Image 1 (cartoon, rainbow, N blue to C red):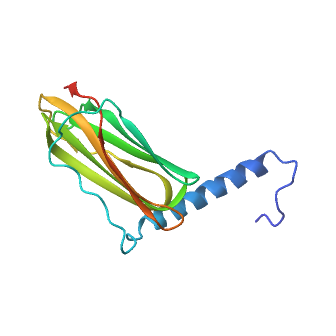
Image 2: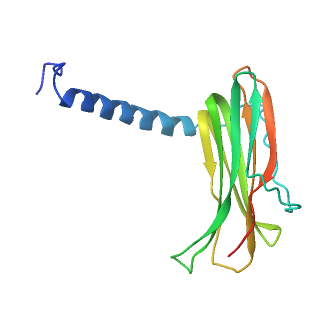
Image 3: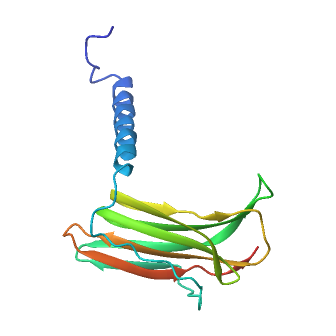
Amino acid sequence: MRTRGWKLNSRLGPFVAVVIAAAALVTTGSSAQAETKTPGFSTPTLSTHAGGVSIQTTTVVSHGIWSCTLGANLPNRWYGGSGGGEQAFGYLNCSHVMPEIHIEVSLYRNGSPVASTDNDKLSASIANAAPSKSPHTSGTYKSGALASVRWPDNTISQIPQIFSGTISL
């Protein structure tokens, strides 16, 4: 059993410190996700139809020194399993850790939503959501994303829905 600490000149000492720090982050991250949403934090609702497509796939909302970027990526086709399918991807990336962030992403086929998912995070700066639909069905696809942010001063902003470009899959 080792009873002495790592030597300052040791090459292994910094590596062990990094491993321990990474393990602490993983442990903290999984317990933080087990929490429930803050009472009074309302989440927006995805549109039931795609409407006109915006060529802008990202939007930025700011509140004082803080800002968050919402993005909706072009859907992609994946292969495997029961013949593959299609997947959308959306993200919310904030400049600082926020008390709560929420993102909803929907996959649209021929202008109608076919799959959606959401992600609510407490004490986080990044949230992703990736709905998918299987099996593959030919059509025109796009992603739609919207979000809510609780700023550190406890005010809330809702980020309106944005759409990716369209692609035939």
